[in-house]
Amino acid sequence: MNEFALIKRYFQDAQTASQVVLGIGDDCALLDIPGHHHLAVSVDSLVEGVHFPKTYAPEKIATRAFAVALSDLAAMGAKPLGFTLSLTLPEALVSDAWLAPFASGLLQVAAQYRCPLIGGDTTRGPLTVGVQVLGAVEQGRALTRSGAEAGDQVFVTGPLGDGAAALAVLMGELTLPAEQSAYLERRFSQPQARIAAGRALLGIASSAIDISDGLLADLGHICDASGVGARLELSGIPYSRGLQSYVRPQQLLQWALSGGDDYQLCFTLPPEQRPALDRLCANGQLEAHCIGEMVLHSGIDCRLNGAVYQPEATGYSHFD
Amino acid sequence: MNEFALIKRYFQDAQTASQVVLGIGDDCALLDIPGHHHLAVSVDSLVEGVHFPKTYAPEKIATRAFAVALSDLAAMGAKPLGFTLSLTLPEALVSDAWLAPFASGLLQVAAQYRCPLIGGDTTRGPLTVGVQVLGAVEQGRALTRSGAEAGDQVFVTGPLGDGAAALAVLMGELTLPAEQSAYLERRFSQPQARIAAGRALLGIASSAIDISDGLLADLGHICDASGVGARLELSGIPYSRGLQSYVRPQQLLQWALSGGDDYQLCFTLPPEQRPALDRLCANGQLEAHCIGEMVLHSGIDCRLNGAVYQPEATGYSHFD
Image (tube, rainbow over the protein chains, first blue to last red):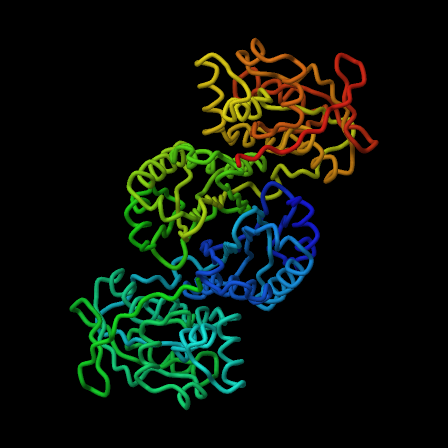
Protein backbone atom coordinates (compact mmCIF):
# COMPACT_ATOMS: atom_id res chain seq x y z
CA MET A 1 0.00 0.00 0.00
CA ASN A 2 1.36 3.42 -0.92
CA GLU A 3 -0.05 5.67 1.78
CA PHE A 4 0.39 8.86 -0.23
CA ALA A 5 -1.28 7.48 -3.34
CA LEU A 6 -4.18 6.10 -1.29
CA ILE A 7 -4.92 9.35 0.47
CA LYS A 8 -4.57 11.39 -2.68
CA ARG A 9 -6.81 9.17 -4.77
CA TYR A 10 -9.79 8.95 -2.48
CA PHE A 11 -9.65 11.92 -0.18
CA GLN A 12 -7.92 14.71 -2.08
CA ASP A 13 -11.21 15.93 -3.52
CA ALA A 14 -12.72 16.44 -0.09
CA GLN A 15 -14.86 19.56 0.09
CA THR A 16 -13.17 22.44 1.78
CA ALA A 17 -14.53 25.42 3.68
CA SER A 18 -13.56 28.98 4.44
CA GLN A 19 -12.09 28.08 7.85
CA VAL A 20 -9.62 25.64 6.22
CA VAL A 21 -6.52 27.72 5.52
CA LEU A 22 -4.52 24.67 4.45
CA GLY A 23 -6.04 21.21 3.95
CA ILE A 24 -4.69 17.76 3.13
CA GLY A 25 -1.13 17.49 1.81
CA ASP A 26 1.24 19.45 4.06
CA ASP A 27 2.84 18.55 7.41
CA CYS A 28 -0.19 19.94 9.24
CA ALA A 29 -3.57 21.30 8.27
CA LEU A 30 -4.20 24.93 9.24
CA LEU A 31 -7.56 26.10 10.57
CA ASP A 32 -8.86 29.58 11.21
CA ILE A 33 -10.58 29.63 14.62
CA PRO A 34 -13.21 32.39 14.90
CA GLY A 35 -12.49 35.12 17.46
CA HIS A 36 -13.85 34.75 21.02
CA HIS A 37 -14.25 30.99 20.54
CA HIS A 38 -12.58 28.01 22.11
CA LEU A 39 -11.50 25.00 20.13
CA ALA A 40 -13.39 21.79 20.99
CA VAL A 41 -11.50 18.53 20.32
CA SER A 42 -12.54 14.90 20.58
CA VAL A 43 -11.33 11.57 19.18
CA ASP A 44 -13.15 8.25 18.69
CA SER A 45 -11.89 4.99 17.22
CA LEU A 46 -14.26 2.33 15.91
CA VAL A 47 -12.93 -1.21 15.63
CA GLU A 48 -14.34 -3.97 13.42
CA GLY A 49 -15.98 -6.69 15.49
CA VAL A 50 -16.36 -4.34 18.45
CA HIS A 51 -18.17 -1.22 17.24
CA PHE A 52 -19.52 -2.55 13.95
CA PRO A 53 -20.01 -6.09 12.60
CA LYS A 54 -17.44 -7.84 10.43
CA THR A 55 -17.99 -7.38 6.69
CA TYR A 56 -20.14 -4.32 7.40
CA ALA A 57 -20.62 -2.12 4.33
CA PRO A 58 -17.75 0.39 3.96
CA GLU A 59 -20.03 3.42 3.48
CA LYS A 60 -21.88 2.50 6.68
CA ILE A 61 -18.68 2.12 8.66
CA ALA A 62 -17.66 5.56 7.43
CA THR A 63 -20.92 7.33 8.27
CA ARG A 64 -21.15 5.65 11.66
CA ALA A 65 -17.58 6.48 12.66
CA PHE A 66 -18.03 10.11 11.62
CA ALA A 67 -21.37 10.59 13.40
CA VAL A 68 -20.19 8.96 16.64
CA ALA A 69 -17.24 11.36 16.81
CA LEU A 70 -19.27 14.40 15.76
CA SER A 71 -21.79 13.65 18.48
CA ASP A 72 -19.20 14.78 21.05
CA LEU A 73 -19.12 18.23 19.44
CA ALA A 74 -22.93 18.32 19.64
CA ALA A 75 -22.77 17.51 23.35
CA MET A 76 -20.50 20.55 23.93
CA GLY A 77 -22.64 22.89 21.84
CA ALA A 78 -19.76 23.32 19.38
CA LYS A 79 -20.06 23.92 15.66
CA PRO A 80 -17.92 21.64 13.46
CA LEU A 81 -14.76 23.06 11.86
CA GLY A 82 -13.17 19.94 10.36
CA PHE A 83 -11.91 16.44 11.10
CA THR A 84 -8.93 14.18 10.58
CA LEU A 85 -9.08 10.47 9.77
CA SER A 86 -6.80 7.69 11.07
CA LEU A 87 -7.51 4.68 8.93
CA THR A 88 -6.04 1.27 9.75
CA LEU A 89 -6.71 -1.16 6.90
CA PRO A 90 -6.00 -4.85 6.38
CA GLU A 91 -4.40 -5.58 3.02
CA ALA A 92 -7.57 -7.15 1.65
CA LEU A 93 -9.46 -3.86 1.90
CA VAL A 94 -6.90 -1.74 0.06
CA SER A 95 -8.99 -1.80 -3.09
CA ASP A 96 -11.31 0.38 -5.12
CA ALA A 97 -14.20 -1.85 -4.09
CA TRP A 98 -13.75 -0.93 -0.43
CA LEU A 99 -12.12 2.50 -0.52
CA ALA A 100 -14.41 4.15 -3.07
CA PRO A 101 -17.67 3.64 -1.10
CA PHE A 102 -15.89 4.31 2.21
CA ALA A 103 -14.54 7.66 1.02
CA SER A 104 -17.75 8.62 -0.72
CA GLY A 105 -19.88 7.78 2.35
CA LEU A 106 -17.52 9.70 4.60
CA LEU A 107 -17.24 12.81 2.45
CA GLN A 108 -20.99 12.88 1.87
CA VAL A 109 -21.94 12.84 5.56
CA ALA A 110 -19.12 15.30 6.33
CA ALA A 111 -20.53 17.67 3.72
CA GLN A 112 -23.98 17.46 5.33
CA TYR A 113 -22.48 18.73 8.56
CA ARG A 114 -20.16 21.21 6.78
CA CYS A 115 -17.24 19.52 8.52
CA PRO A 116 -14.44 19.04 5.97
CA LEU A 117 -11.73 16.37 6.08
CA ILE A 118 -8.49 18.25 6.71
CA GLY A 119 -5.91 15.49 7.16
CA GLY A 120 -5.18 12.00 8.33
CA ASP A 121 -2.97 8.98 8.06
CA THR A 122 -3.29 5.36 7.01
CA THR A 123 -1.63 2.29 8.49
CA ARG A 124 -1.79 -1.44 7.79
CA GLY A 125 -3.62 -3.59 10.33
CA PRO A 126 -7.05 -4.77 11.48
CA LEU A 127 -9.82 -2.43 10.32
CA THR A 128 -10.05 0.57 12.66
CA VAL A 129 -11.49 3.97 11.86
CA GLY A 130 -10.30 6.86 14.04
CA VAL A 131 -12.03 10.22 13.66
CA GLN A 132 -10.75 13.35 15.38
CA VAL A 133 -13.25 16.19 15.29
CA LEU A 134 -12.48 19.87 15.75
CA GLY A 135 -15.14 22.45 16.52
CA ALA A 136 -15.58 25.95 17.87
CA VAL A 137 -17.71 27.10 20.76
CA GLU A 138 -18.21 30.60 22.10
CA GLN A 139 -15.83 31.28 25.02
CA GLY A 140 -17.35 30.38 28.38
CA ARG A 141 -20.55 28.94 26.89
CA ALA A 142 -19.67 25.27 26.23
CA LEU A 143 -22.12 22.66 27.55
CA THR A 144 -19.94 20.71 29.97
CA ARG A 145 -20.91 17.78 32.18
CA SER A 146 -20.24 19.66 35.38
CA GLY A 147 -22.84 22.44 35.41
CA ALA A 148 -25.93 20.58 36.66
CA GLU A 149 -27.49 21.64 39.97
CA ALA A 150 -30.14 20.13 42.20
CA GLY A 151 -33.53 21.33 40.98
CA ASP A 152 -32.54 21.35 37.30
CA GLN A 153 -34.84 19.32 35.06
CA VAL A 154 -33.44 16.44 32.96
CA PHE A 155 -34.25 16.14 29.26
CA VAL A 156 -33.44 13.96 26.27
CA THR A 157 -33.63 15.22 22.68
CA GLY A 158 -35.41 12.23 21.12
CA PRO A 159 -36.26 8.51 21.24
CA LEU A 160 -33.98 6.18 23.19
CA GLY A 161 -33.50 2.47 22.66
CA ASP A 162 -33.17 2.61 18.88
CA GLY A 163 -29.43 1.97 19.06
CA ALA A 164 -29.79 -1.19 21.12
CA ALA A 165 -32.76 -2.36 19.05
CA ALA A 166 -30.74 -1.91 15.87
CA LEU A 167 -27.94 -3.94 17.44
CA ALA A 168 -30.41 -6.74 18.27
CA VAL A 169 -31.63 -6.76 14.66
CA LEU A 170 -28.05 -6.79 13.32
CA MET A 171 -27.14 -9.69 15.59
CA GLY A 172 -30.22 -11.67 14.54
CA GLU A 173 -31.79 -11.50 18.00
CA LEU A 174 -34.80 -9.47 16.89
CA THR A 175 -36.88 -9.78 13.72
CA LEU A 176 -38.99 -6.84 12.61
CA PRO A 177 -40.95 -5.88 9.49
CA ALA A 178 -38.72 -4.61 6.67
CA GLU A 179 -39.64 -0.93 7.10
CA GLN A 180 -38.84 -0.97 10.81
CA SER A 181 -35.60 -2.89 10.27
CA ALA A 182 -34.50 -0.40 7.65
CA TYR A 183 -35.26 2.52 9.97
CA LEU A 184 -33.17 0.99 12.76
CA GLU A 185 -30.37 0.10 10.37
CA ARG A 186 -30.15 3.76 9.37
CA ARG A 187 -30.11 4.82 13.01
CA PHE A 188 -27.16 2.47 13.54
CA SER A 189 -25.17 3.15 10.38
CA GLN A 190 -25.84 6.88 10.28
CA PRO A 191 -26.73 8.25 13.70
CA GLN A 192 -27.66 11.93 13.66
CA ALA A 193 -25.21 14.04 15.64
CA ARG A 194 -27.41 16.59 17.41
CA ILE A 195 -25.30 19.59 16.40
CA ALA A 196 -28.27 21.94 15.94
CA ALA A 197 -29.74 20.91 19.31
CA GLY A 198 -26.42 21.51 21.07
CA ARG A 199 -26.08 24.93 19.45
CA ALA A 200 -29.67 25.84 20.41
CA LEU A 201 -29.03 24.85 24.03
CA LEU A 202 -26.06 27.21 24.53
CA GLY A 203 -26.89 29.64 27.31
CA ILE A 204 -29.98 27.62 28.25
CA ALA A 205 -28.88 24.13 29.39
CA SER A 206 -26.69 23.82 32.50
CA SER A 207 -24.99 20.59 31.34
CA ALA A 208 -25.13 18.11 28.48
CA ILE A 209 -23.77 14.76 27.30
CA ASP A 210 -24.46 12.55 24.29
CA ILE A 211 -25.99 9.15 25.00
CA SER A 212 -23.47 6.64 23.71
CA ASP A 213 -23.38 4.14 26.60
CA GLY A 214 -27.02 4.26 27.72
CA LEU A 215 -28.99 6.86 29.66
CA LEU A 216 -27.97 5.67 33.12
CA ALA A 217 -24.24 5.53 32.37
CA ASP A 218 -24.18 8.87 30.59
CA LEU A 219 -26.43 10.76 32.99
CA GLY A 220 -24.22 9.19 35.66
CA HIS A 221 -21.26 11.07 34.18
CA ILE A 222 -23.19 14.34 34.53
CA CYS A 223 -24.04 13.43 38.15
CA ASP A 224 -20.40 12.61 38.97
CA ALA A 225 -18.98 15.70 37.28
CA SER A 226 -21.61 17.99 38.83
CA GLY A 227 -21.57 16.43 42.30
CA VAL A 228 -25.32 15.83 42.36
CA GLY A 229 -27.78 12.98 41.74
CA ALA A 230 -30.92 12.49 39.64
CA ARG A 231 -34.47 11.27 40.14
CA LEU A 232 -36.01 9.94 36.92
CA GLU A 233 -39.62 9.20 35.99
CA LEU A 234 -39.04 6.57 33.34
CA SER A 235 -42.51 6.89 31.82
CA GLY A 236 -41.25 10.14 30.29
CA ILE A 237 -38.68 8.39 28.06
CA PRO A 238 -39.67 8.71 24.38
CA TYR A 239 -39.45 5.75 21.95
CA SER A 240 -39.65 5.65 18.19
CA ARG A 241 -43.21 4.90 17.07
CA GLY A 242 -42.58 1.69 15.13
CA LEU A 243 -40.52 0.08 17.85
CA GLN A 244 -43.29 0.31 20.45
CA SER A 245 -45.58 -1.91 18.37
CA TYR A 246 -43.10 -4.77 18.18
CA VAL A 247 -41.07 -4.81 21.38
CA ARG A 248 -42.43 -5.31 24.89
CA PRO A 249 -42.19 -2.23 27.14
CA GLN A 250 -39.83 -3.87 29.65
CA GLN A 251 -37.29 -4.60 26.90
CA LEU A 252 -37.62 -1.11 25.45
CA LEU A 253 -36.97 0.44 28.83
CA GLN A 254 -33.94 -1.77 29.39
CA TRP A 255 -32.51 -0.74 26.02
CA ALA A 256 -33.14 2.94 26.74
CA LEU A 257 -31.43 2.78 30.13
CA SER A 258 -28.43 0.61 29.33
CA GLY A 259 -28.28 -0.03 25.60
CA GLY A 260 -26.43 3.00 24.31
CA ASP A 261 -25.64 4.02 20.73
CA ASP A 262 -28.57 6.43 20.64
CA TYR A 263 -26.58 9.67 20.22
CA GLN A 264 -29.39 11.80 21.52
CA LEU A 265 -28.34 14.51 23.94
CA CYS A 266 -29.21 14.29 27.63
CA PHE A 267 -29.18 17.76 29.19
CA THR A 268 -30.15 19.55 32.38
CA LEU A 269 -32.10 22.80 32.53
CA PRO A 270 -32.39 25.36 35.35
CA PRO A 271 -36.13 25.90 35.99
CA GLU A 272 -35.93 29.58 35.00
CA GLN A 273 -34.85 28.52 31.50
CA ARG A 274 -37.99 26.45 30.91
CA PRO A 275 -39.78 29.21 28.96
CA ALA A 276 -36.75 29.60 26.67
CA LEU A 277 -36.68 25.84 26.05
CA ASP A 278 -40.42 25.74 25.39
CA ARG A 279 -40.01 28.50 22.80
CA LEU A 280 -37.25 26.51 21.03
CA CYS A 281 -39.47 23.43 20.98
CA ALA A 282 -42.51 25.38 19.78
CA ASN A 283 -40.42 26.84 16.94
CA GLY A 284 -39.32 23.34 15.93
CA GLN A 285 -35.67 24.14 16.68
CA LEU A 286 -35.42 21.36 19.24
CA GLU A 287 -37.16 18.23 20.47
CA ALA A 288 -37.00 17.80 24.26
CA HIS A 289 -38.63 15.31 26.62
CA CYS A 290 -38.51 15.83 30.38
CA ILE A 291 -37.56 12.63 32.21
CA GLY A 292 -36.78 13.84 35.73
CA GLU A 293 -34.81 16.26 37.83
CA MET A 294 -31.44 16.63 39.49
CA VAL A 295 -31.32 16.14 43.26
CA LEU A 296 -28.80 16.78 46.03
CA HIS A 297 -28.15 13.17 47.06
CA SER A 298 -25.87 11.20 44.75
CA GLY A 299 -26.94 8.30 42.54
CA ILE A 300 -29.78 7.91 40.05
CA ASP A 301 -33.14 7.07 41.59
CA CYS A 302 -35.55 5.54 39.03
CA ARG A 303 -39.38 5.53 39.25
CA LEU A 304 -41.80 4.01 36.79
CA ASN A 305 -45.24 5.60 37.01
CA GLY A 306 -44.32 6.67 40.54
CA ALA A 307 -43.12 3.26 41.81
CA VAL A 308 -39.48 2.55 42.63
CA TYR A 309 -37.83 0.78 39.68
CA GLN A 310 -34.61 -1.21 39.85
CA PRO A 311 -32.92 -1.37 36.41
CA GLU A 312 -31.22 -4.60 35.36
CA ALA A 313 -27.54 -4.40 34.59
CA THR A 314 -26.62 -5.34 31.03
CA GLY A 315 -23.36 -6.24 29.42
CA TYR A 316 -21.80 -4.64 26.41
CA SER A 317 -22.38 -6.33 23.04
CA HIS A 318 -19.45 -7.03 20.77
CA PHE A 319 -19.67 -8.26 17.19
CA ASP A 320 -17.15 -11.06 17.50
CA MET B 1 -10.91 -3.46 30.06
CA ASN B 2 -12.85 -0.57 31.51
CA GLU B 3 -11.92 2.31 29.27
CA PHE B 4 -12.89 4.99 31.76
CA ALA B 5 -10.96 3.45 34.62
CA LEU B 6 -7.89 3.00 32.44
CA ILE B 7 -7.80 6.56 31.24
CA LYS B 8 -8.48 7.95 34.69
CA ARG B 9 -5.86 5.89 36.40
CA TYR B 10 -2.90 6.62 34.17
CA PHE B 11 -3.65 9.83 32.37
CA GLN B 12 -5.82 11.91 34.66
CA ASP B 13 -2.80 13.46 36.32
CA ALA B 14 -1.47 14.80 33.05
CA GLN B 15 0.08 18.26 33.42
CA THR B 16 -2.15 20.98 32.20
CA ALA B 17 -1.40 24.43 30.82
CA SER B 18 -3.02 27.84 30.65
CA GLN B 19 -4.35 27.24 27.11
CA VAL B 20 -6.28 24.15 28.30
CA VAL B 21 -9.72 25.48 29.26
CA LEU B 22 -11.09 21.96 29.79
CA GLY B 23 -8.96 18.81 29.75
CA ILE B 24 -9.63 15.09 29.97
CA GLY B 25 -13.06 13.95 31.18
CA ASP B 26 -15.77 15.77 29.23
CA ASP B 27 -17.24 15.15 25.77
CA CYS B 28 -14.54 17.36 24.23
CA ALA B 29 -11.46 19.15 25.45
CA LEU B 30 -11.54 22.93 25.09
CA LEU B 31 -8.48 24.92 24.03
CA ASP B 32 -7.85 28.64 23.97
CA ILE B 33 -6.23 29.55 20.65
CA PRO B 34 -4.16 32.76 20.85
CA GLY B 35 -5.43 35.69 18.75
CA HIS B 36 -4.08 36.16 15.19
CA HIS B 37 -2.97 32.53 15.08
CA HIS B 38 -4.07 29.57 13.01
CA LEU B 39 -4.55 26.14 14.49
CA ALA B 40 -2.10 23.51 13.15
CA VAL B 41 -3.33 19.89 13.25
CA SER B 42 -1.65 16.61 12.42
CA VAL B 43 -2.19 12.95 13.26
CA ASP B 44 0.22 9.99 13.21
CA SER B 45 -0.38 6.36 14.11
CA LEU B 46 2.46 4.01 15.02
CA VAL B 47 1.83 0.28 14.70
CA GLU B 48 3.75 -2.48 16.47
CA GLY B 49 5.84 -4.48 14.02
CA VAL B 50 5.74 -1.66 11.48
CA HIS B 51 6.94 1.50 13.19
CA PHE B 52 8.57 -0.06 16.22
CA PRO B 53 9.72 -3.62 17.01
CA LYS B 54 7.57 -6.14 18.82
CA THR B 55 8.08 -6.21 22.61
CA TYR B 56 9.61 -2.72 22.41
CA ALA B 57 9.71 -0.98 25.82
CA PRO B 58 6.42 0.85 26.54
CA GLU B 59 8.12 4.13 27.55
CA LYS B 60 10.06 4.10 24.28
CA ILE B 61 6.94 3.45 22.22
CA ALA B 62 5.33 6.41 23.96
CA THR B 63 8.18 8.86 23.48
CA ARG B 64 8.67 7.82 19.86
CA ALA B 65 4.99 8.13 18.96
CA PHE B 66 4.78 11.54 20.56
CA ALA B 67 7.94 12.93 18.95
CA VAL B 68 7.04 11.64 15.48
CA ALA B 69 3.69 13.44 15.65
CA LEU B 70 5.12 16.61 17.19
CA SER B 71 7.72 16.79 14.43
CA ASP B 72 4.91 17.80 12.03
CA LEU B 73 4.21 20.88 14.17
CA ALA B 74 7.93 21.70 14.05
CA ALA B 75 7.87 21.49 10.26
CA MET B 76 5.08 24.12 10.12
CA GLY B 77 6.78 26.45 12.62
CA ALA B 78 3.91 25.92 15.07
CA LYS B 79 4.16 25.96 18.86
CA PRO B 80 2.51 23.00 20.62
CA LEU B 81 -0.86 23.53 22.39
CA GLY B 82 -1.81 19.97 23.33
CA PHE B 83 -2.41 16.46 22.00
CA THR B 84 -4.91 13.62 22.09
CA LEU B 85 -4.05 9.93 22.31
CA SER B 86 -5.79 7.01 20.55
CA LEU B 87 -4.49 3.88 22.18
CA THR B 88 -5.31 0.43 20.80
CA LEU B 89 -4.16 -2.25 23.22
CA PRO B 90 -4.15 -6.05 23.15
CA GLU B 91 -5.54 -7.61 26.31
CA ALA B 92 -2.10 -8.75 27.46
CA LEU B 93 -0.88 -5.16 27.77
CA VAL B 94 -3.77 -3.88 29.90
CA SER B 95 -1.63 -4.06 33.02
CA ASP B 96 0.26 -1.83 35.39
CA ALA B 97 3.50 -3.30 34.08
CA TRP B 98 2.82 -1.91 30.61
CA LEU B 99 0.59 1.10 31.23
CA ALA B 100 2.56 2.73 34.03
CA PRO B 101 5.82 3.16 32.07
CA PHE B 102 3.90 4.00 28.89
CA ALA B 103 1.96 6.80 30.58
CA SER B 104 4.97 8.06 32.50
CA GLY B 105 7.16 8.14 29.36
CA LEU B 106 4.45 9.92 27.42
CA LEU B 107 3.64 12.54 30.03
CA GLN B 108 7.31 13.20 30.67
CA VAL B 109 8.19 13.94 27.05
CA ALA B 110 4.96 15.92 26.64
CA ALA B 111 5.95 18.07 29.62
CA GLN B 112 9.36 18.75 28.05
CA TYR B 113 7.60 20.23 25.04
CA ARG B 114 4.89 21.91 27.16
CA CYS B 115 2.30 20.02 25.14
CA PRO B 116 -0.32 18.60 27.55
CA LEU B 117 -2.50 15.54 26.95
CA ILE B 118 -6.05 16.87 26.57
CA GLY B 119 -8.08 13.79 25.62
CA GLY B 120 -8.15 10.44 23.92
CA ASP B 121 -9.76 7.06 23.65
CA THR B 122 -8.74 3.45 24.10
CA THR B 123 -9.81 0.40 22.12
CA ARG B 124 -8.93 -3.28 22.23
CA GLY B 125 -6.78 -4.62 19.41
CA PRO B 126 -3.22 -4.94 18.12
CA LEU B 127 -0.93 -2.34 19.69
CA THR B 128 -1.30 0.99 17.87
CA VAL B 129 -0.51 4.43 19.23
CA GLY B 130 -2.24 7.35 17.52
CA VAL B 131 -1.18 10.86 18.46
CA GLN B 132 -3.04 13.93 17.26
CA VAL B 133 -1.10 17.15 17.85
CA LEU B 134 -2.55 20.64 17.99
CA GLY B 135 -0.44 23.75 17.68
CA ALA B 136 -0.68 27.45 16.91
CA VAL B 137 1.16 29.43 14.29
CA GLU B 138 0.98 33.14 13.53
CA GLN B 139 -1.53 33.82 10.73
CA GLY B 140 0.07 33.77 7.29
CA ARG B 141 3.51 32.73 8.56
CA ALA B 142 3.34 28.90 8.62
CA LEU B 143 6.21 27.03 6.92
CA THR B 144 4.39 25.13 4.19
CA ARG B 145 5.86 22.81 1.57
CA SER B 146 4.80 25.03 -1.30
CA GLY B 147 6.82 28.21 -0.85
CA ALA B 148 10.20 27.18 -2.33
CA GLU B 149 11.48 29.03 -5.41
CA ALA B 150 14.34 28.44 -7.82
CA GLY B 151 17.45 30.05 -6.38
CA ASP B 152 16.53 29.27 -2.75
CA GLN B 153 19.19 27.37 -0.83
CA VAL B 154 18.40 23.97 0.75
CA PHE B 155 19.32 23.25 4.38
CA VAL B 156 18.96 20.50 6.96
CA THR B 157 18.98 21.18 10.71
CA GLY B 158 21.30 18.36 11.78
CA PRO B 159 22.82 14.95 11.09
CA LEU B 160 21.00 12.56 8.75
CA GLY B 161 21.21 8.78 8.67
CA ASP B 162 20.93 8.26 12.44
CA GLY B 163 17.36 6.95 12.10
CA ALA B 164 18.29 4.30 9.56
CA ALA B 165 21.46 3.39 11.46
CA ALA B 166 19.42 2.93 14.63
CA LEU B 167 17.04 0.68 12.71
CA ALA B 168 19.97 -1.43 11.49
CA VAL B 169 21.23 -1.78 15.07
CA LEU B 170 17.74 -2.70 16.32
CA MET B 171 17.36 -5.32 13.60
CA GLY B 172 20.76 -6.81 14.38
CA GLU B 173 22.22 -5.81 11.02
CA LEU B 174 24.82 -3.48 12.49
CA THR B 175 26.97 -3.89 15.59
CA LEU B 176 28.51 -0.84 17.21
CA PRO B 177 30.30 -0.02 20.46
CA ALA B 178 27.93 0.35 23.43
CA GLU B 179 28.12 4.14 23.61
CA GLN B 180 27.32 4.54 19.92
CA SER B 181 24.48 1.99 20.09
CA ALA B 182 22.97 3.79 23.06
CA TYR B 183 23.14 7.14 21.24
CA LEU B 184 21.33 5.70 18.21
CA GLU B 185 18.79 3.93 20.38
CA ARG B 186 17.89 7.29 21.94
CA ARG B 187 17.62 8.89 18.52
CA PHE B 188 15.13 6.15 17.59
CA SER B 189 13.11 5.95 20.79
CA GLN B 190 13.07 9.65 21.49
CA PRO B 191 13.64 11.70 18.34
CA GLN B 192 13.88 15.44 18.99
CA ALA B 193 11.04 17.33 17.33
CA ARG B 194 12.70 20.51 16.02
CA ILE B 195 10.08 22.85 17.47
CA ALA B 196 12.57 25.60 18.36
CA ALA B 197 14.15 25.42 14.90
CA GLY B 198 10.76 25.67 13.20
CA ARG B 199 9.81 28.67 15.34
CA ALA B 200 13.14 30.38 14.60
CA LEU B 201 12.66 29.88 10.85
CA LEU B 202 9.28 31.69 10.69
CA GLY B 203 9.59 34.65 8.36
CA ILE B 204 12.98 33.41 7.15
CA ALA B 205 12.55 30.02 5.45
CA SER B 206 10.41 29.81 2.30
CA SER B 207 9.35 26.18 2.89
CA ALA B 208 10.00 23.34 5.33
CA ILE B 209 9.30 19.64 5.92
CA ASP B 210 10.43 17.15 8.54
CA ILE B 211 12.57 14.25 7.33
CA SER B 212 10.57 11.14 8.15
CA ASP B 213 10.90 9.16 4.90
CA GLY B 214 14.43 10.14 3.87
CA LEU B 215 15.87 13.34 2.41
CA LEU B 216 15.04 12.54 -1.21
CA ALA B 217 11.41 11.60 -0.56
CA ASP B 218 10.74 14.55 1.74
CA LEU B 219 12.58 17.18 -0.29
CA GLY B 220 10.66 15.66 -3.22
CA HIS B 221 7.42 16.70 -1.50
CA ILE B 222 8.69 20.29 -1.29
CA CYS B 223 9.65 20.14 -4.99
CA ASP B 224 6.21 18.80 -5.98
CA ALA B 225 4.28 21.27 -3.84
CA SER B 226 6.41 24.24 -4.96
CA GLY B 227 6.61 23.27 -8.63
CA VAL B 228 10.39 23.39 -8.74
CA GLY B 229 13.35 20.97 -8.52
CA ALA B 230 16.56 20.76 -6.51
CA ARG B 231 20.27 20.30 -7.15
CA LEU B 232 22.08 18.79 -4.17
CA GLU B 233 25.77 18.60 -3.33
CA LEU B 234 25.73 15.50 -1.13
CA SER B 235 29.11 16.22 0.48
CA GLY B 236 27.28 18.90 2.49
CA ILE B 237 25.14 16.36 4.38
CA PRO B 238 26.10 16.25 8.07
CA TYR B 239 26.47 12.96 9.98
CA SER B 240 26.75 12.29 13.67
CA ARG B 241 30.39 12.02 14.70
CA GLY B 242 30.43 8.51 16.10
CA LEU B 243 28.64 7.00 13.13
CA GLN B 244 31.28 8.15 10.65
CA SER B 245 33.95 6.10 12.39
CA TYR B 246 32.06 2.83 12.08
CA VAL B 247 30.05 2.93 8.87
CA ARG B 248 31.42 3.26 5.36
CA PRO B 249 30.55 6.56 3.63
CA GLN B 250 28.52 4.95 0.85
CA GLN B 251 26.21 3.31 3.40
CA LEU B 252 25.88 6.54 5.42
CA LEU B 253 24.92 8.46 2.30
CA GLN B 254 22.36 5.85 1.36
CA TRP B 255 20.80 6.04 4.83
CA ALA B 256 20.71 9.83 4.73
CA LEU B 257 19.03 9.92 1.33
CA SER B 258 16.49 7.12 1.73
CA GLY B 259 16.51 5.86 5.31
CA GLY B 260 14.15 8.25 7.01
CA ASP B 261 13.24 8.52 10.71
CA ASP B 262 15.69 11.40 11.23
CA TYR B 263 13.12 14.09 12.13
CA GLN B 264 15.47 16.90 11.23
CA LEU B 265 13.89 19.72 9.26
CA CYS B 266 14.73 20.25 5.61
CA PHE B 267 14.03 23.86 4.62
CA THR B 268 14.60 26.30 1.79
CA LEU B 269 15.91 29.83 2.17
CA PRO B 270 15.67 32.81 -0.18
CA PRO B 271 19.24 34.13 -0.68
CA GLU B 272 18.36 37.51 0.89
CA GLN B 273 17.56 35.71 4.16
CA ARG B 274 21.03 34.19 4.45
CA PRO B 275 22.32 36.89 6.84
CA ALA B 276 19.31 36.33 9.13
CA LEU B 277 19.94 32.58 9.12
CA ASP B 278 23.65 33.07 9.81
CA ARG B 279 22.79 35.24 12.81
CA LEU B 280 20.47 32.54 14.21
CA CYS B 281 23.23 29.95 13.79
CA ALA B 282 25.87 32.21 15.34
CA ASN B 283 23.59 32.76 18.34
CA GLY B 284 23.17 29.00 18.76
CA GLN B 285 19.42 29.21 18.08
CA LEU B 286 19.65 26.90 15.11
CA GLU B 287 21.92 24.38 13.41
CA ALA B 288 21.79 24.55 9.60
CA HIS B 289 23.80 22.81 6.88
CA CYS B 290 23.53 23.93 3.26
CA ILE B 291 23.17 20.93 0.93
CA GLY B 292 22.12 22.53 -2.36
CA GLU B 293 19.70 24.85 -4.05
CA MET B 294 16.31 24.83 -5.68
CA VAL B 295 16.22 24.94 -9.48
CA LEU B 296 13.59 25.54 -12.16
CA HIS B 297 13.60 22.10 -13.76
CA SER B 298 11.77 19.39 -11.84
CA GLY B 299 13.38 16.42 -10.10
CA ILE B 300 16.29 16.17 -7.68
CA ASP B 301 19.72 16.23 -9.28
CA CYS B 302 22.41 14.79 -6.97
CA ARG B 303 26.15 15.51 -7.13
CA LEU B 304 28.88 14.10 -4.90
CA ASN B 305 31.95 16.32 -4.82
CA GLY B 306 30.79 17.74 -8.12
CA ALA B 307 30.26 14.42 -9.97
CA VAL B 308 26.79 13.18 -10.95
CA TYR B 309 25.54 10.70 -8.34
CA GLN B 310 22.75 8.18 -8.86
CA PRO B 311 21.15 7.17 -5.51
CA GLU B 312 20.11 3.56 -5.02
CA ALA B 313 16.46 2.92 -4.30
CA THR B 314 15.77 1.30 -0.95
CA GLY B 315 12.77 -0.45 0.45
CA TYR B 316 10.98 0.33 3.65
CA SER B 317 11.91 -1.73 6.71
CA HIS B 318 9.21 -3.34 8.81
CA PHE B 319 9.71 -5.05 12.13
CA ASP B 320 7.75 -8.18 11.33
